[in-house]
Amino acid sequence: MKIKNIFKDKTEMNTENTEKEHIESDVESVVNEIETAEELSVEAKLEENLAIEKDKFLRLFAEFENFKKRTAKERIDLFRTANEEVLQAMLPVMDDFDRAMVQISKSEDEVLLKGVVLIYEKLKSTLVAKGLEQLDIRAGDVFNADFAEAITQIPAPTDDLKGKIVDVIEKGYKLGDKIIRFPKVVIGQ
Image 1 (tube, rainbow, N blue to C red):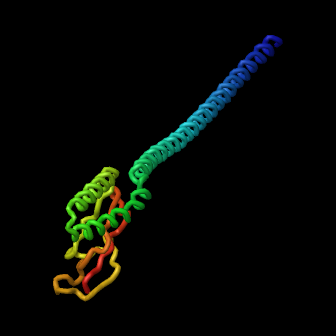
Image 2: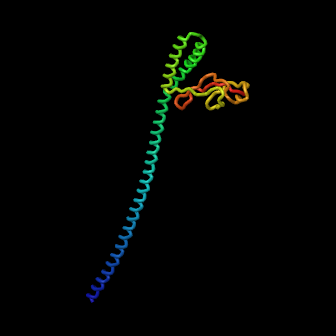
Image 3: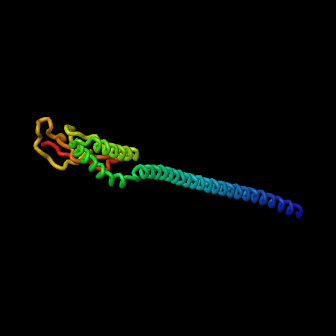
């Protein structure tokens, strides 16, 4: 009987061991599945964080590129218009030369006229070299408020001058694409 009991105990122990091994194996597989799920979850979170950071980087890079382009454009504009104040200060001198030319041409002193014309042309060519351009607006042109300043309206001398420029009082100038002084005109009503 003792042998039977021993055999029975061994059989029970084997059964218990087998059950224990199955339970351990089940527990181990569940733990592995949990670890795998956690690793996938962590990996997915890392990939999501990486995508977010990559998007932030691309946006920041694009913003920086736009900043560089904007500042380069502003720098170019600044160089173009750096002499704007000096050129604006020279415009009344140009106007005075225009008035002097009209008065000197009425006199019969050709040497004086020739000397003033030489100085005027030199001043004008220097200002043109610095980017100053005269606006081409003449009597008879259609008035456009974007390119000229109407200082007064008079009854039109003829019907074809209604709404058009009758006289240019002061010339207009631009520096590059920017008008630095609008021409002052009289328009027909």
